[in-house]
Image 1 (tube, helix red, strand yellow):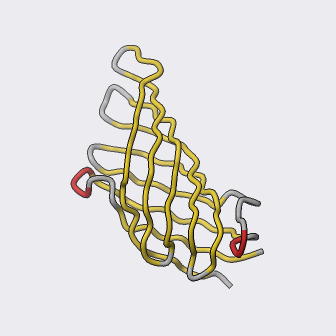
Image 2 (cartoon, one colour):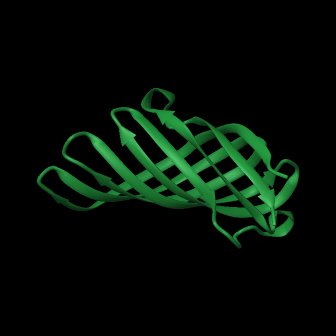
Amino acid sequence: MSQNATGTRILKSWDEKDFTEADGRKLTSSAIAYSYTGAIEGDGVQQYVMFYRAEDSTTFVGLEQIVGRLDGRSGSFVLQHTGELTGDTAEVTWTVVPGSGTGELAGLTGTGGFTATHEEAGNATYRLDYSFE
């Protein structure tokens, strides 16, 4: 049976570096750290690769490892992110990477995501619909 987890992810750090740029378009990599409260309690570290278009929109993909607790179960798991930033709003979907759960989170599967704005300084309300194999 699927369960729903919600809470807040709080930006702790963001380190972004360009690795190519031409004609107003660029590729960057970002190392980011978050803390989680709510159904997920713990810390996440992630790496994004981002493509900035000339017309003020960005596509990005990445992986994030979260270490902590999910609804009282301890361990870690990895989320695969896919997102789009248009203007000041980022829409992100994520999927639990199969086989990434450890400890009491072994067998975790799920999908979810969040919406974040520049006004919220990278903080967002997340959702994760999950189950165990």
